[in-house]
Length: 312
Ligand code: AGV
Ligand code: CA
Image 1 (cartoon, rainbow, N blue to C red):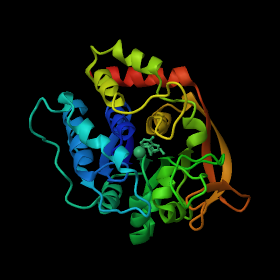
Image 2: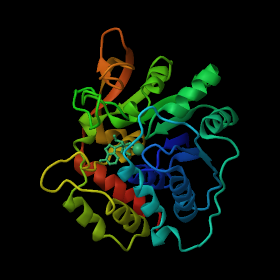
Image 3: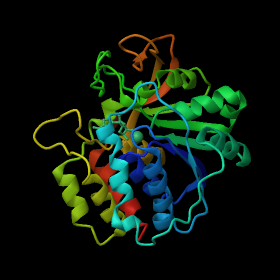
Image 4: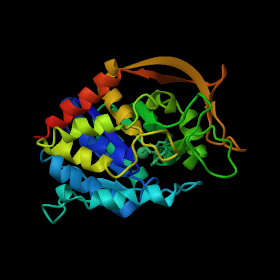
């Protein structure tokens, strides 16, 4: 069994990632932290606890709320999706929530869980890196307890996904939310596997993918995934700024099934000031990162189905 701590930011693909982590046969989930970045904290926290109740096979976990604040807030329209997801009937049959909220804020919960867990822990992070950066600043020694960080964020190809004033379009949202946090993590000795936009662009949400889930509604977890992804725009006629990709799910599934992706080693750094702040870029003097470059599209979606069916 591998110890995994998951820190996410409450968007649809973050919460689907949580569902899938709970099904992975060789994963021992030691903790979950939630940051209200691409979500509002209250519904993202509640939905996380309900997903553990409904799909966690009786696991005893608590969920830590983050008090981290970003430099550049996510668009409100996107953040509101967490309220809809939290209200889906499939998460609310029980009428009560059993999985408790952790006593400490997410960055302190992360430190505690790393220290309390024998051996090393793999971190999966599908939102901004703020909680990890704060943990490293408070207790630099914890990096020895982290075997690897799998992060959805950044991009190296110059095509960002932030459409906001006063930036140059080269940055990815999770990095843009808190560029300094990315820098702190980059300056640490943690091994990093990065899923950036160059690979997630290969796995857009499409009508065909939705249809695949619609045909498997008899499996409750696939029904939940289909309902969740019904809340967000698919790639239909052309890509817009709101088109949804399976960003976080790719980072999460690739941490469990490395064969679905190819990677390359790069050395990189991150900008923290100017119109490109938040931009990750390759440079010979940079720190090593394992970058996911390509995805076996069909094997990836097949693995999602297989994992979800384990929740039956
Ligand atoms: O940049 C991708 C990150 C992922 O962690 N998030 C969404 C995923 O959870 C931000 C984001 C970028 N474009 C978006 C986003 C969109 N069109 N809708 C919602 N969130
Ligand atoms: Ca996310």
